[in-house]
Length: 371
Image (cartoon, rainbow, N blue to C red; front, side):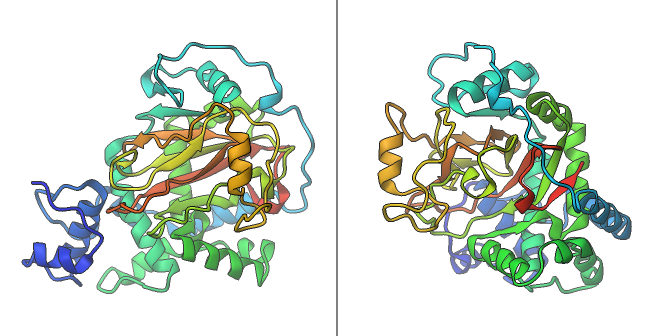
């Protein structure tokens, strides 16, 4: 059964009068319909298979492990190395008509990533993760953001949910002392996101998920060295609507140009294109420098102005690919991108973003952690 797509929770409640807006049933219906545009056959509680798995984890063990991952990089200085983009890549032919190179997960080989990054600065791998797992992960993102925004779940599972979805490592506060950590949290809250490390259990779950999908080997093969991650750039995303049109940026503007990087952005629901939920706007071309950040009317000192955007486009058009749950977009710190801009979005977008760096050539200002 299709339902009218709307941002209004009140209209949703009118459409489904059998549910209470403050009940678990209503909450799950809201998430399911807004994520997929489909009414679920059965309205369960707020839990699903991924939430259940997280609640069954040993939160104390996860917390100790994340603290150790952060401790592994305390007092460790980055070392300049040959970056992935400095190495000559093979030239593979992707199917005609692809404005952004893409490949199905079953047919993926590391040279697809090397070639696409060298020619377009990005690659989409379709179906890299289970669509069912990622769709369930939408609820995880909701619960994590509710926890970080001070809206704890009520009920018999409240204590377990709080322990699971908001248990940040103590090392984080020491590595990002106030007011830096307060600023980072406020920035994420305003934009509709939360750092994965706010929940040690979510972090460890994701690392296990990545390992099972072969991500650690993919990243290591591409970077040419074992990977590490970033506490500040490992993020659960549900962008606040409406979207800011001035969000164009290159992450290297605040992470540094000389790093060895690869970002993995995973869609958790159908988004982008004409889906009704914002995906990503991309300028798919190989850049090797930071362009005009903070100049000519840019909103932030790290964002890119409209003037710099126009001068950088050359013959490349801005592309907003459509994504399904489980699709992954890879790019590095030079790609020009933003959350897809538009005035007619009717559903939220859910995604998980993970920045990987070489274990030796990393941005120390982004709080690295070991893998």
